[in-house]
Amino acid sequence: MTQPFRLQVGGVIDRSRLLGFRFDGREYEGHPGDTLASALLANGVRVVARSFKYHRPRGIFAAGAEEPSALVRLETGGQAEPNRRPGEIVLFDGLRASSQHAWPSLAADFGALAGRVAPLLPAGFYYKTFIAPRALWAPVWEPLLRRMAGLGRAPAEPDPVRYDKRHAHCDVLVVGGGPAGAAAAIYAARKGIRTGIAAERFGGQVLDTMGIENFISVSHTEGPKLAASLEGHVRDYEVDVMNLQTAVELVPAGEAGGLHEVKLASGASLRGRTVILSPGARWRQMGVPGEDEYRNKGVAYCPHCDGPLFKGKRVAVIGGGNSGVEAAIDLAGIVAHVTLIEFDPALRADAVLQAKLRSLPNVAVVTSALTTEVLGDGQKVTGLVYTDRENGGSHDVELEGIFVQIGLVPNSEWLKGSVALSPRGEIEVDARGSTSVPGVFAAGDATTVPFKQIVIAMGEGAKASLSAFDYLIRH
Image (cartoon, rainbow, N blue to C red; front, side, top):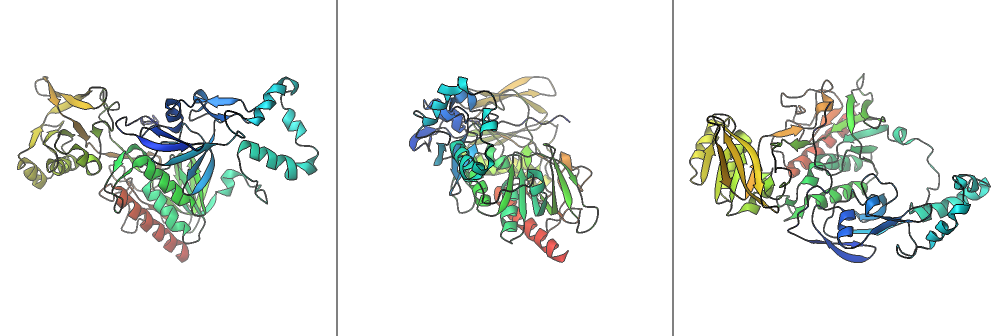
């Protein structure tokens, strides 16, 4: 199956603002949306780590998301988390990170002396050297190697169980690391039951949202910062966090009270007495030139989140269904003018919404129109181009913002045939978050619950978790 395009980490950088972060105790500034590796390079820091074997410098060319040698320690949720790739860490205000393979510093690393004697050390010498005598491994070599590698202390009793087997029997297995999944994991862990969470990227769609001003009790935050807080809060509890894991299949239990199985793209399988599905959704994109380039620079997908940022400006809403018309009505009270563009010959929204829309003096409706390009000056949106589908004419519209409202696509393709889905692909749930399969629950933007909002997703995640706990004590 062809995978849908998704913007990569660090793909959207807001160069209009700066935020502060620390690396190895020094203060730096970077742009929201940038990665730690890229921001350090912009500040002249070219060495972010040193290799374990010979402590050779590892810089920006080794700081990508797939490089295993350039690792740093990230302080999140009040804890220091080692072995994080700087190319995967999205900046947030107050971020604190440090190098972990160098002593006393990256610039002057004592371990680099190993490189001087490298010609005398044949390949694989360390396997032969440190394994014997075995009596010295636990008290001497292992602590020393772990310290040099920045891995921390070894557990008192090493766990001999394989990774995929150790996580296999959760009481509650959460799939998805967005707001719904994080809330579900926290509520389950607080009940004192075995909880695991598998996430493709912790934070989910929140990572693609820059300004968040409608999260109750928090007047303003940013998506990457909220995502880091979600992960840190989950790690405050005894939750087995399995990040960068993509679920590809759900195999329901063969009998009531049995184990449900979730297969991962890595080949591992996870099992749980209950499963909470929170795979989230992705915005349906127009797929026209300029859309990706000006995402979060004038192209937006959430009028509730980003609408106030366009106060007094001209905007367009793409889509004439209920969500598009509701967005236009909502924005009309904030912005100077709204142009609603609909592909079909007539709006598809409910009649009462259409009547309200046409009563607004600062709204223009254009039907039978196909948006073909987003225009900008390199920094922000300046307009769009649409084609009249009746006569083929091309028209330019000058504006400062574009809200794409052509629907959300739930990330539920892998669930077809396992649980009941709506015609739109949403997971069907009842008032308790239960799906069509006993013991399997769902929450968040991938479900049939209306109003796709962060605060609603969190509440639904908590509710699904409480329902899962109720199911466990009854079975």
